Length: 72
Image 1 (cartoon, rainbow, N blue to C red):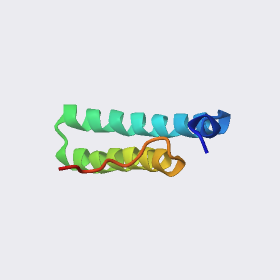
Image 2 (cartoon, one colour; image 1 turned 120 degrees about the vertical axis):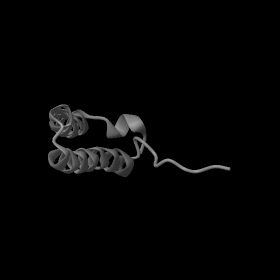
Image 3 (cartoon, rainbow, N blue to C red; image 1 turned 60 degrees about the vertical axis):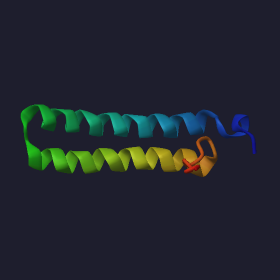
């Protein structure tokens, strides 16, 4: 399957939803940081990381982005 076969309206809709979730999580993280609220910052950081992970897993699963490799 080529990249052109993967990217369609359904892909773009799902990806947009994942981007929106990541953006919302980052906004909450930013507010907690600005407020100096460490407890909420830690929770929001975990939520943001999870949103990024979901997005990357989706892209990896479809072969759009390959997982990073370590080379020596």
